[in-house]
Image (cartoon, rainbow, N blue to C red; front, side, top):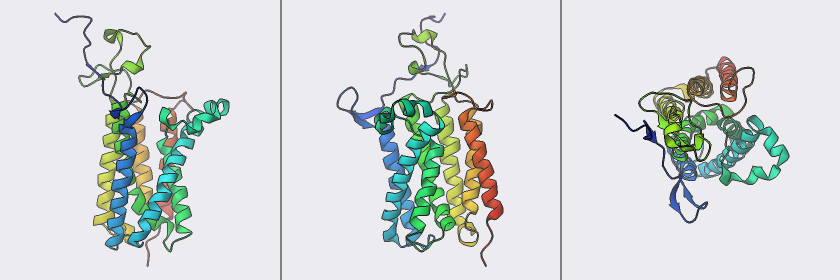
Length: 275
């Protein structure tokens, strides 16, 4: 007979730090996920420019990555408060710069990427969608790494479930609650890492390197990403505990993702083959 005081599922006990100097300061996996995502993404774009797959001089990729890093960080941060916690930043604006407390929105990050690309193409001889296709083909890699970091941090957990692979997240309960009384939840961060991140990344890399889409129909890959990511996010939202109040009866992540699907459909309808 099992001990009723013993948790029936794995209890999340991972540290958010790779190296920890004190209680709140150290080298965090979340920060490393961004660093690794930008480094790998920049390398892929550099190789694309070197091989003529991207109409950009290889040495210009460093400037592009600088713009993208700023776009992702500013867009993700502002997007989080604008889309999920507008009241918080109105009551305490200093929260905007307290990045160590967490709070980034993928939808806001995508908007930031779009703004960064728009700024970059004004200074370099390359079309917006030609560059967007290359950038968006690497973006899901960062999403996947970020979701893995979310799991390590024990945040953005899923809905309550009794599946065998469910995880008990102590942070999901009131402090002091006995572990045996904390319900197990879907590890929705892992679902998102696979579906929103690595699977889409693999598909878009195939589209970018092995098909004529980026050369003959700029914008095609961008439109496909908006639709596929939007659908993938809607699916993962079914397993994720809502992290803000509902809008129109939908989780905010679902609503914003449906808007991405609409935007992607518009982009696809407007893209025309060259020549």
